Amino acid sequence: MGDPCTFAHTRCHPGPNRDSRLPSGLAPVAATDADHALRRELYFFTLYRLLEAALLALLVFGPAQVLIRAPTLPLLARGVVLGYMLAAMLLFVSGRRGDLHTQALIGIIVDLAAGILALHALPAAGTGIALMLVFNVGAAALLLRMRYGLGMAAVAVALILGEYALSEYAGGSERVVGEPAMFALGFMAIATLTSLLGREMRASSDLAERRGAEAANYAEINELIIRRMRTGVLLVDGEGRLRLANEAAMLLLGDPGEHSEHSHRNLAIASPELARRLGRWRADAIPDETPLQMAADQPEVVPRFTRLLAGSDQTLIFLDDTSLVSRRAESITLAALGRFSASLAHEIRNPLAAISYAVQLLEESRDIAVADRRLLEIVRQQGTRMNGIVENVLGMARREPAKPEHVELVGFNRQFVDEYNSSHPIELDSLRATSTQPRIAALVDPRQLHQALTVLVHNALTYGRMPGEPARVTVHAYLDANAVPVIDVLDRGPGIPESVAARLFRPFFTTSSHGTGLGLYIARELCRANQASLDYVPMPGGGGCFRIHLSGTNAMLPA
Image (cartoon, rainbow, N blue to C red):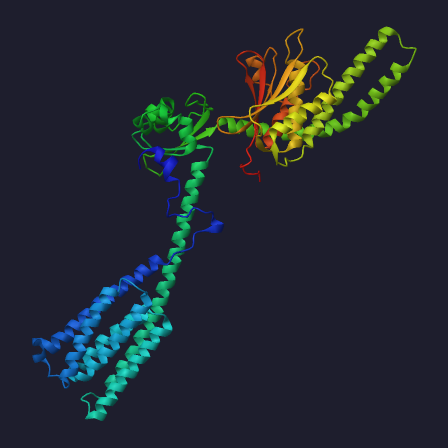
């Protein structure tokens, strides 16, 4: 089986002559294999024709003529035998080329013509010649379509009866009339049976070809599915050698450049801990489902073991990525939380509006003491904060699907900064747009990108500043080393501690008493809806950076 890399990068790729389309577009069944089978039958038929010609030549020219009476028409006999021998050799040579049905049709015409003439010239060997023609008629009916096969049988019947009538007219035949009649009946019977047999054989061959092509396509599909699975799959033999591995498994084992070819063939070298667990499972049949990190910078996995076949020493190892399970569980939880929060937010808005309206009325009253007005201000501020939380929750719950468009990022960033500066008074702070290219094309929903950038810029202006200094925020667009469009929101603040950065994008997580903890979470979800990513990148010289990797204009639209 060889190197697992072969399976991951070559074996699962459809070869140049293999069709890997999905079942709705299965590869058409080629008739080449069926033709090869019939051409093989035609090859044996041409060999039999050479044998017939050799037997006739032996009767006419060889010592075998002493066993029968001399030909009644010697010149005709010699001419027929020589012509038949030449035709048989030509048909044998050309039988591997040209149209199969044409070859078979020409062959049976030559056989009938030579056979009837030989029968007329050698009446003593007439019975044997007629018997040989029975096989020729049957073989032609097998190779030809049914109407042609029966047509050739009818021609053979007409010729043998015509030859008998001619012999009777010329001077009397030594054969009785029942003999050509029985041969005629035999020709029709054998032609009918072999035609039916040939039709069934061709139908079975076509069916087998279709089933084989479908099986080959499904095998390709299965290999492609296994190769693209997010779950790692390894096949290990009894000696701990890796026989097969899909792409996910190779990635979890680490970069192939870090190991020699031998190490990737041996599980004990590629992953000692996994080899230890496999050995324990084989010995005690007790699986260890503790999460395992097989290589640096790779997620933890839970290995599962199963035998390839009953009694086999080969073992299939499935490596389940725990991060995928966690994200799926988190997604389900957040979906349920979003529905619950949306219904709860609607119920909160009405009393919250009443409280805010009552506070406004109280603030207009002259009977409120100065000390109490400070309490009203606190109520108003917290009401405003509560209203912001409600708005964020409702926006998260009713977020519409992304509608990606072709966007020119440099102009978009400039327009965004101008709009933000005009609608948000930032006083001494500064916000500017920069770029390393004059034009950058991306595929994104501009409305949702605007919303995500608003959150990031607001956070940068609020928290990305050194004490006593104005904030300096830059929205920078560029293409990375892989020509992927990127937007960085940079600030010159103190940065974010590593312990806090790990929880930045969790819903309702905030380090501020005035924050809702939903802004960054919503911004990341908006990016994910556009096939983009949002991450926090600490800056070596100080400050923070929120980086958005967008899709290029050649990326596929989400389904």
